[in-house]
Image (tube, rainbow, N blue to C red):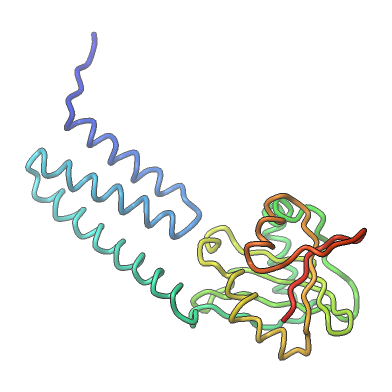
Length: 213
């Protein structure tokens, strides 16, 4: 028996698929965008079947998603008051627990990372809306910081924490007396990321990336 599916049902199935897909997103921004698309599609579906409750519910959901996406856009255009970076001791239990909990995700991006045991280690907790969102760990060599770890949690990678930290937020490094940041790309994704946030590749046998503050 072949089931006939009309165009209205197709719209309903597409809307349902978008909502389910949105719930699988770790990135908050992507979740909002897919949820917006799903609610708009459900609104169209509600219109086609003349269901006022579906139209009202999904109209409200679309408005809520637009509000938060607008807020995210405005924050990106501002001086990022919702983002911060605070120094933390390299032997802090919170820092070590954070690294252990996110170890698998960290090693997907920077597979060679191990927590440095040098005496002059600088560690920063990156925050979004007052909550931990990432971590930067490096070793000081004079006025240069050699970065061992630059990590942002998946759900905050659309927040452009790296662009902020190495741009307007770089004052945290200058305050610590640093004039140069150095990093080694361990994967192709890491290579592209470093170039995107302003690092430049050096020329020579010891090729690495540097950012002058």
